[in-house]
Length: 90
Image 1 (cartoon, rainbow, N blue to C red):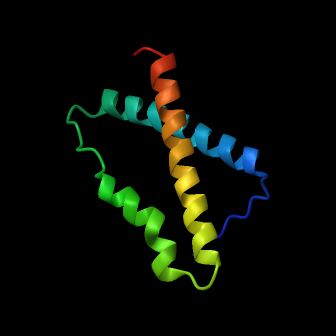
Image 2 (cartoon, rainbow, N blue to C red; image 1 turned 180 degrees about the vertical axis):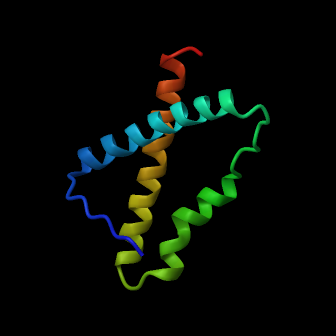
Image 3 (cartoon, rainbow, N blue to C red; image 1 turned 90 degrees about the vertical axis):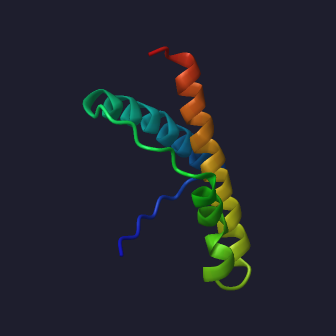
């Protein structure tokens, strides 16, 4: 197990995950250029289970804050992905 600790403020956390989304779009575009077959999209259920995972795995009040942070991360990543997609035509 590898642990990464970043001491971020809430705006810094948001910005970091928006940038992850921007990078994800760039990655998917480059991958699509090099791989002729299209992979199916990740189902929404994957992301819902990801966000809800602390509710079953973490203990105490931490599970709610972890769930909130995971939800915020997914929203920010999605926002970055779509912002990049709408700003830069193929």
